[in-house]
Image (cartoon, rainbow over all chains, first blue to last red):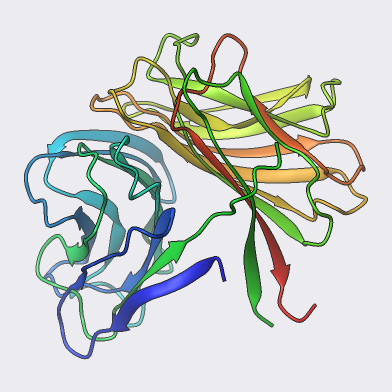
Length: 174
Length: 177
């Protein structure tokens, strides 16, 4: 099986997700999230950190659409990667979630700074965002820990995150 | 019915770099193909932090390729198209102008690669760097030939892939099919 589930859970109460002791035996990682935030606002951002690094070692770029316009942004010297957003406490519906898939290729390769590629979005039947984000962790260390957290507050009960490892072939086909 | 993703081939660029990458003799037993790329170019032919990565199939460089792209660049957005080209666009990855040790990443998804229709594909790629300008493109591409795909090639004129660039080919099939 190429894509191996490395861990994950559905929250029974509000909280966050912290995948530790990630083995270096795969080639790529993928984090899949769906959930809501507890923040007292209509929405909140989904963040990821690597190896518990909360220093200003991250860069973010994102392309987004909000249903009527398209935009692009860049943020330097950040303390996280943004992996989309989600409905929060005052959202119009209590049943919608934000969805995010974050792909990190060559996560254990010590010749490379770590790059995250994110497809994410939320729709609330009249509002929402579609995101195509990227994140750069300015560190060549192998990733052994991934933390998924809300920008403000925490994730609600019922929110879910899973971590997958993806292997490669030993054949080249050259 | 579960989907199964099987690694077929992997190539890692060695010392000295590589002008291009080709996967030959692709087995015809899967439903779809997926290529995961983590790569960087050794030059800057587009005078920016990013550089386009071309793709072609079965060694064919006739004018049978096209693509449509949507992208964001940190401060700008845009869309472009090319038709009747000798290659299509697999996405964009980092050029030599990007932050050192930083490689662009891409997923290229090719459904029904062994079928008898024209070959459509999609890709998403990012070209990160420690600067405001970095490209995040989404691409829809086409090879308007009905041949089954037996090889996939990636390259870019005036640029070589640097050492440590990796290309991973997967076959996707419905379990039990």
